[in-house]
Image 1 (cartoon, one colour):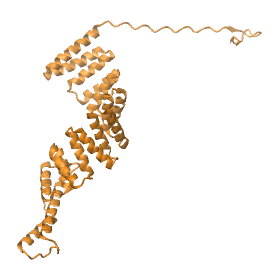
Image 2 (image 1 turned 90 degrees about the vertical axis):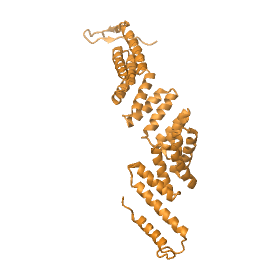
Image 3 (image 1 turned 180 degrees about the horizontal axis):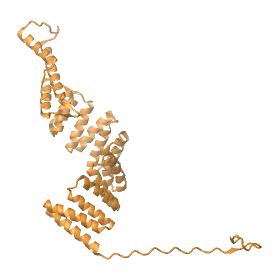
Image 4 (image 1 turned 135 degrees about the horizontal axis):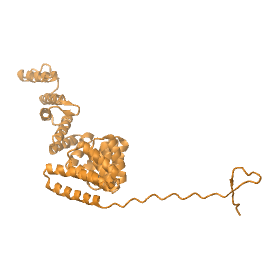
Length: 345
């Protein structure tokens, strides 16, 4: 990798200062040796950070370990270089090193307590660590400084949901969606919160909106299908489970769910065929418990299919229309008949 010009200049200044002792040609007047060392370390830190950022494209580092090495170098030269610490924290999060990332964001907040991105990152680390109380506290601090961040509302709502506070979660998802109407996760998670509150009708509406934004989300399709099942809308549930199978064709459980939806509509032939597919897949996977369960379910469908079905009653014949009393006007034997009308008392 090419060495940038500022680094070469810094190195030259360092060498000149060391080689010529008291001769400070080119140095700023009035700077102490400690000041010059601080400047050199800050310049070296800035250069290492620049090298790390050259590896950053489209929201990710192309060479994560190399980038991490440069960021370590930058922080080693200047422990107070906030941007280097923030970039390292994000990279460490990507690598799943939550505890190390937390050390960096805490160091940033000690230097700059109002650093919004570091505060958000800290809240996210707490969420990933399942410390939802701390995460809520940090997300609330973010929103106290800037209540236009839809993701902070969405994430705090997710924390509330994890703690079983579904009404609070829905309120935060409402705010997230108001700020960002295209927030897929907020719609999906609000749907889950409605399910937790046993309101499947509202859940279906939210999950339908979520599917409009991401039609390839298997979780969304399956969850809506399950909500339709609880509402007794088996035909729609079957359509969702068919869609889920198209997205994940090797999942035996999806065929079992489809079989249940068909059974709900009374189409036991289709239910048996879907259940048999689930059973065959479970046998291939050597899943003994699933094989036993699917075998029993299919036997139940066959028993239902064998039951005599009552013949549908014929539709009742329409009642005959009452005949109108008619009389011919006097003197007009061939004129059109006119209904008689009883006068009101």
